[in-house]
Each structure stands twice: as C-alpha cells, then as structure tokens.
Amino acid sequence: MAMPFTWLKNKAVGTGMDSVGRATKGGVMGKKQPAHEIKLGKIRVAIWANETEDQKIWFTAVVSRIYKSGDQWRGTTTLKHDDLPIAMKAIDMAYAWIWEKNVQVERAERSAASEVLADAGR
Image (cartoon, rainbow, N blue to C red; front, side, top):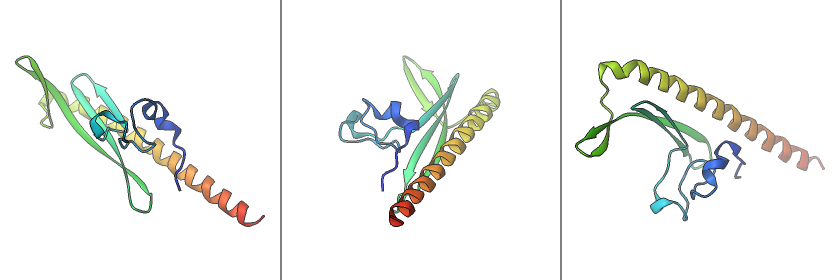
C-alpha cells in the first residue's frame, strides 16, 4: 500500500521523484536523487530513502566535502580537521530530519492500519 508522504511533495513535483525519493521515468536521466540534502559551507549530507520489499522505509546518510580542483568542483568523503565540527552539526541536522520522517512514517502506518480496521468493522 502506497502511503502519502507530504514531506517530499516539493521534490516529487517536477523532478520525477516518488514519495520516498526514488527517481521515476520522468526523472533526470533516471538517476536516484537524495530524499533530502543538508549543506553547510563545503560540507554536504545526502539523505537517501530506501524501501524494503515489504514497503518498510529506512534512511541512510552520506557525508561529503566539496572542493575545487582547477576549474572543476569535486567531492570527497575525506574531511579535514576544520571540517569536523561542521560535519558534526550537519550530521546532527540529518539525524533530526530522519527522526522526524520516521515519526511521520509511523503515524502514516498507524493511520492506514486504523482505516483498514475501521473498514473491516463496517
């Protein structure tokens, strides 16, 4: 059963993404996009939504740092000493975002279960 996830509504419209952050046929080159990104200076935390076969949703996070090499911007998962406090804050923000989304998922699951039980009692 697909659940309505309003927290990705702005990403789902016009970007070819479904409610759990997966690229759909209309997505940019069919690539999966993060469900959410946190950017603090050169530090980035990409939060990815994943779904099991039984439609349970779980999140993972990838921390990276951007840097310029010549005229090109690149990314690395290697952090410098001065990057660590910023990365800690970004990770904390990612944790809070994931926590809130997990609460929303649990509420949606309970609501869906309540609707099924109510329909069964009719």
